[in-house]
Amino acid sequence: MRTLVLGGTRFLSREIARQARDRGHEVVCAARGQAGDPPQGVEFVRVDRAQDGGLSPLDGSFDLVIDVARQPSMVRRAVAELAGRAGHWTLISSCSVYAETHEANQVLHEPLAPGADESDPENYGPAKVTCEQIAGDAALIVRAGLIVGPEDGSDRFTYWVDRLARGGPVLAPGSPDDPVQLIDVRDVAAWTLDAAEKGLAGPYDVMSSPFTRGEMLAGIAEGLSVRPELVWADQAFLTEHKVAPWMGPRSLPLWLPLPEYAGFMARDVSATLDAGLRIRPVADTARDTLAWLRDSGHQVTKSGLTAEEEAELLRLLT
Image 1 (cartoon, rainbow, N blue to C red):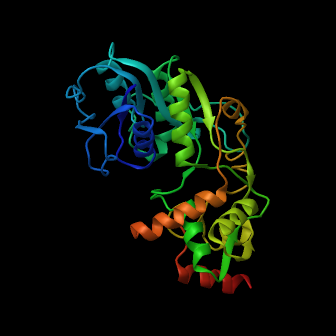
Image 2: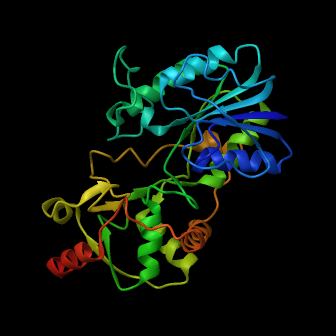
Image 3: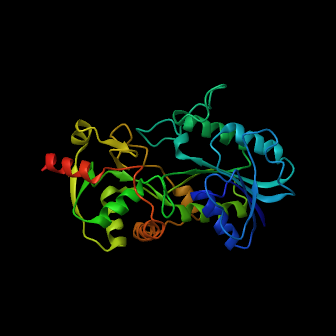
């Protein structure tokens, strides 16, 4: 197959390009080239999707097109400019398209309002809904959950790998029974290519089945061959001491307040599992993430607590 990856220079799109290459596809990656380098052994074409006609440097037709864009204007241009040259279309979307977080229903955000800032993070969900509509009913829509693993620079899951590897008492958020859903970037890429090659269409939630935070931390510990000393802090304590949820500075990543977010990590993925999604053990993801951290020299700074912040919170808690 001749496969076009609109992106291919960072994290998921780069992994998709890498795996497509390894399957024997003729892979073309099209991007500005500012986020990183595409995998070796693929063709790279420099484009600017922010401009009309930005995909004009691309020649020929493609059996598969895989797009990771979040801006509706970029998806709209791609669909128009590749009309008649694209076979099967895949859009990497997000479970953030769902409007409700307190329960796991399928109600979507309203599409992004005309004139709204499509680059505003607050508009991410509505913008992805609009991207899905532009891609159309014949497209495969990959509504990915939290993507983790090697080369993840968001430091959400990576924070926990780094923290457990350092040892000592570890401040853990909420309850060990709180639900968690995530997926290794390599598993997203593999299923996306499988589904695209089969010509699947429509939306699929692509992530693990729900499991618990306690199981997640135990899986990380297994992968790192450590026995962590977990000190659990409940939601009231974290809120009182201004610990942010989910990600970012002074946060405990992957923690979300309940009941407001009870449905955010409780999606039913049975249809995707039936369609062949395979989920590797958390221990394997943790082990490989730590290896990447050490090989790359990546510093975990975007999300989590500093050592000093954690030490102060542990002192207050105990």
